[in-house]
Image (tube, rainbow, N blue to C red; front, side, top):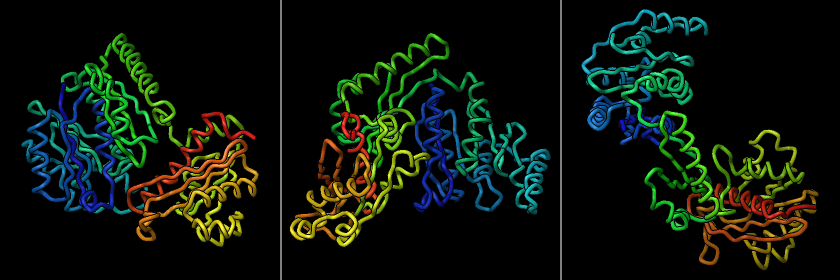
Length: 423
């Protein structure tokens, strides 16, 4: 199996202002080609650290894929550093220079002299066309190594990889190994260690497959990968094996499984509501409307989502939802009793089939020993059921709000899957 090393460049990646999604995309795509990713580096726009990263990659792997640093400015050094290490001389490619000139002309903008560096490549390299920007990429195979340079903006990088770089890799029989098939299963409810314990019998036996667990914003992502050859029989065998493993995981985790593949928690809830012809209303306190945003981010949500109320103050809880003053005085705004009355009041006022409520302490202040930061109550009211779930979350303010909103949606999902929620 061939090995790869990924390098993401850009000082913004080290400042925490930009998330490195490029390496995640590349690792997944390379894995599908049967290329094992040995590691990755995130480096700033600095010649010394960039040189060290490329040296590490070339020492460890057969293929080095880098994104970023192909622009026209002084700190765009990726191509220069990579070519120096490979012993290649950069030369101006007139065809690429004309492409860049045309890009600017179509937008009625002036091309500066600094953009000329983007049209310089070693004669032995294949230039990768950038259909979305000004920075072409590069594919260089030399001395048993392959070097791929891609632009930094994720949209440009993904388009160039899929349409220019990957076809070259697929055509290089020396580089690619047996392909693989994979599937992601999303779980919400048990923690990562609990999921690992439940699946211990599957995780411990992986001669022809691999299973990885990843915690992501309250969800546990289970990624199954099965080795697959390039012939039809091997691919069909891998597909059967993938289905078999998925079924074993579904049997083990049951209703805790939210969805598979590209589906999402919101998508699952939306589908159940639509199929059952039910409507949902929400009332939020500590989550501040985040649950409603998650729902309405999905096009067509007006078919099943009545709307929401953000009842942040006690006055709003009383005036808009009918929460009793004595309930707030005796139990407080963050309590099982208040969450129940919020859900009941919302269902009564909206006429929706299901109403879900959230009240809690998102922090960083406002908690105490009896009611710490992260304490959240989620209420759900429908014709045949009223329930309140107490949750204890850990994290910063945004993290707690996200976990609260997702858990509320998951409570709705579980109720719908159990057959409840009808009129």
